[in-house]
Length: 215
Image 1 (cartoon, rainbow, N blue to C red):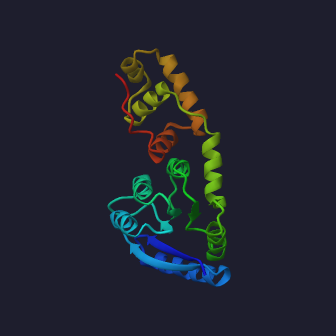
Image 2: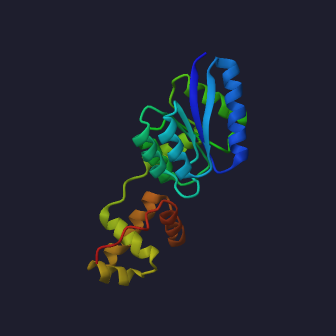
Image 3: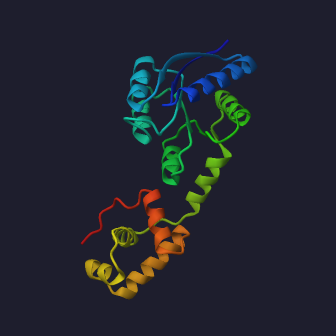
C-alpha cells in the first residue's frame, strides 16, 4: 500500500474532518494510505508543518488567519518543493484563482461542490492527474478571455475608485477629458461592466485599485 504523508490546512475543523472522511474513502478504493502528519488552522501553522514534515501531499485552504493565499503556497514550495499541493477553497476572487493556477498547484477544488464530486476529483489528483474543478475552470477561462488593462487604464481606474471626476482625472494625468472618457469606455468594455459603481466594485474585487496613479 502506497503511503502518502499528508498535511491538512483549514481554519475550520469541520472541513478538516470532511477531508479526512474523503481520504478514507479514497484509501479504500485505491489502496493509498494517507498518514495525516499534521493539521493547521492558520497559514503560519501550515508553513511550519510543511517545513517540519516535508509531506507528500498538502490540502490547503488559501483564506486562513495570519497568512494565506499565494504567500503560503510560495513558502510551501520553498520548504518542500516535492509536495503535491491541492487548493480546497471557496474564494470568489478571480485574480487570486488565476494566481494560484500560475503557481502550478496540483489541483484547485471548490468547497461548494458536493462531497461525491470532490472525492472523485481528489481520487484523480492522487492518481497523478492535475485537476481544476469545473467551477474554477470556468473562472480561469473567463479571466483568460479578459483583455489586459494598459498602464494608463489602470491609472484612470485608480482615480475613478478614488472618487475623482472626469475633469479632475484629465487635470491630474494631463490629458483631455475626451481621452478620459475613452479610457473609461475601454475599462468598462474590458471588465464587462456598464456603470461606474460596477466598475469600482470590479476593481476592488480583483485587487486592481491598489496601484498608485502617476501624477
